[in-house]
Length: 117
Image 1 (cartoon, rainbow, N blue to C red):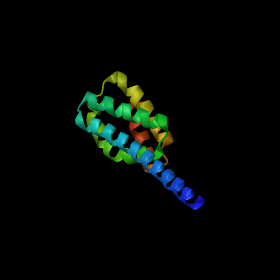
Image 2: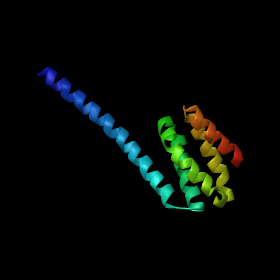
Image 3: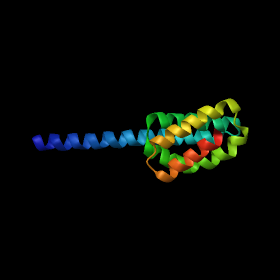
Image 4: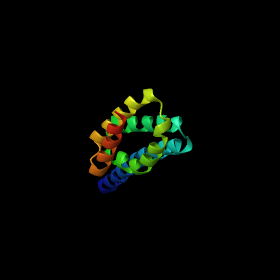
């Protein structure tokens, strides 16, 4: 009987971890869908919100997953980016670069940050 309870608890713990991870990824997918759906200044704003959220959370894996798709979209939208948004976008890039453990992604974020400052 004790063994059945241990197995059931283990299955519940694994299920909870999978659910937690999937929930975070769905949030990332929804945020990226919002960035993809808008253009120009609105895309710049949506990207800044996403980067600020990821940087504040310090989620290295999420930053590394999102950046390859986000970078070209953001670079395309930068000419339309409102000037008063650029400092907060630079700060969000810095926070994400600091949190990200993937060196190539962190370098790309810092390059973008340096171009905004």
